[in-house]
Amino acid sequence: MIDKVLVANRGEIAVRVVQAANELGIETVAVYSDTDETAKHVRRADEAVHVGSSVASKSYLDQESLLDAAAETGADAIHPGYGFLAENESFARQVEESEFIWVGPPSDVMADFGEKTKARAIMDAAGVPIVPGTDEPVDDPGRVKAFADEHGYPVAIKADGGGGGRGLKVVTGPDEAEEAFTNAKREGEAYFDNDAVYVERFLENPRHIEVQVIGDSHGTVRHLYERDCSVQRRQQKLIEETPSPVLDEETREELCEAARSGVAEAGYSSAGTVEFLYEDGDFYFLEVNARIQVEHTVTESVTGIDIVKEQFRVAADEELSFEQSDVNSRGVAMEFRINAEDPYEEFTPTPGTLETYRPPTGMGVRVDDGVNEGDRISPFYDSLVGKFIVTAQDRQEVLERSKRVLEEAQIEGISTTIPFHLAVLEDNVFVESDHTTKYLDHQFEGVTEFE
Image (tube, rainbow, N blue to C red; front, side, top):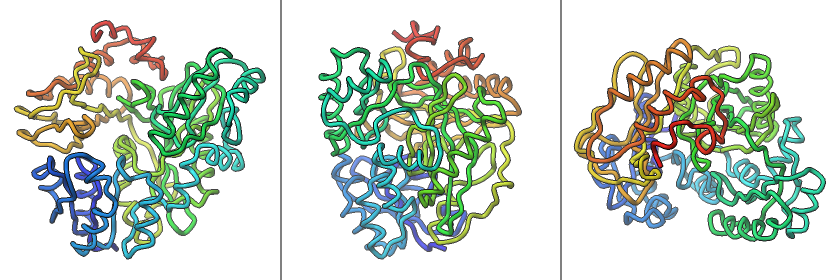
């Protein structure tokens, strides 16, 4: 097993990794920027190293500083968490070629799935349904029009190295193709250092359903069932739940096995997520996130499997500790992302000091956070304060319990997204599970409260 790990991240995911490492007897090293000198992840780790200024590019994204910190503290492994460098192929390769163990998917697999056209080709070859689209990047807006002539409008132009909605442009007619093509390439270059784009049919009203997978270096890949992530704002997830309330058992098994077998064909190891769009009874491969996900917590809550611990075991060249037949999903779980944002003001970030911070407790409640009362939410990073994960026997009970949990939380000093979550829990479309990824734009009856 690994003896000491450097956690190359901050906030709640850094705390989460430290906790899993503690249970495995692994010593932990936190890294911090100027702003985070007294942050919770620093306080929880066995030791900590300053890696730069508050600007992420000069601290948490500074690859050399992170490698130097690992060497300085005698760490033998690096866990990237999610975000920052978690899906950075070059950083993963540097770690693999050094004396350190990389706690994540191999860099070559990360590279394969990092390019969307290559990922589509891999999954198509494995027999996983994909949205009709181009097999290679397109280099001319004329090819966008030609694809649309064959498949119909609307179509989506997507950055080949993209994700999170960046580099995505929807084209509803031929007169929009040239501008959308140019803008998608520009965003791809700006965000992913890759201006290549491809085209696919645009699904207008899908659900977003993802499957948690994990594999070891001995050729074994398991799935841990699915999560429904359809409540999104600008392609950013806000509420996640498992199981998806729209899948029947036959479709669920088919979807999860497609995800598992698809990444197995690519030699995948460590934790990852295979994302799908689901519409009119059919599912289509979207992308692979080659890292731990923010919402891994809901899967852990219903399966009882500690995904981060399994990441450490896989990195130490151990086999997975469970068989596929051991994976049983029990009950229902929902995760609410509590962000320092004002939902009454277009979700404007509200950095500041947590004058009061008393998270909920009680039956069926898990809180993953990176703060304590008196800590400051920094304007330099994302606005996530923490995550409230609620479990119950069925969806009706989890909805009722979630209201209690959100109302019980006491947070003062900043605005949060709690009022938004409470409004969603009262909305019939969500309660009846009729929502899609367009929910907040077109279906949410309470949206006028936040305009």
